[in-house]
Image 1 (cartoon, rainbow, N blue to C red):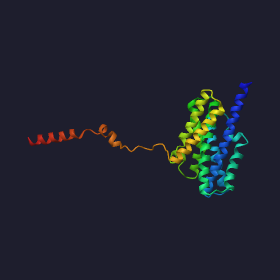
Image 2: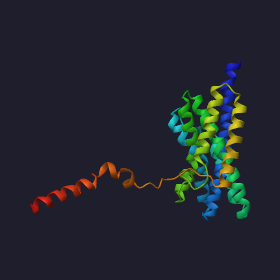
Image 3: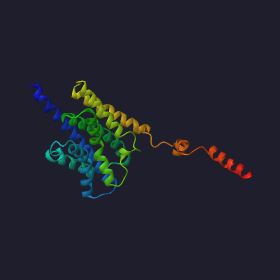
Image 4: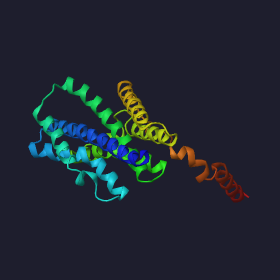
Length: 243
C-alpha cells in the first residue's frame, strides 16, 4: 500500500513545486514586460513564455507524452495569473529590485528541484536529472530574455545563476540516492540554493570568464621554429659568399 502511495505523493509534490515556479516566473516575465513598456498582449506572451518555457523544454526532452503544461488544466491559468498580477500592480524600482531577486532565487531553486525529481521519476540517471533540473530552472528565463533582445542571465553577469540551479538539482539527486525524505531533500535544496543565490548577488560572485593568456605566447614556441637557427643559416650563407 505504501509503495502504491509513494509515486502519487512524488507526482503531487513535483506538480505543486512546478506550479509555484510557473507563477513566480510568469510574474517575473510580466515585470520584464512592464519594464519594456509592452501592452497587455506583451504581458501575456512574455509571462507565459517565462512561466512555462523551462517545463515545456524538460517535458519534450523526457518524451513521456505531451508536456504537463498542455495536459494539466492549472498550468496556463496560473501563468496568466502571474502575468496579470504584474500587469495590475506597480512597484517602485527599489521595492521591485528587492522582490525580484528574492522571487527569482526561489523560483530558480524550486524548478531545479522539480526538474530533477521528474527526471528521476522517469527512470533516468543522476546526470540527466541534474541536466534537466538546470534546464527546467533557466529555460523559461533564457527564452524570455531572448524575446526582449537581451543577453540571457544564464550566460553570466548576474551572479551565480545556472550553477546554483545545477547545485540544487545535484542536492536533490544525492538526497534521493541516499533515501533521504523528499520533503527534507526538497527543503534543503531550495533553502541552500536560495541563500547561495542571494549571497552571490549581494557580493557580486560570478564564474570566471575567458582567460587573458595570449595564444601566441602559449603556442608560439611549439609552432614557430627557433629564430637562432634561421640566423645561423643566414650567417653561413654570408660566410660562404665571402669565401
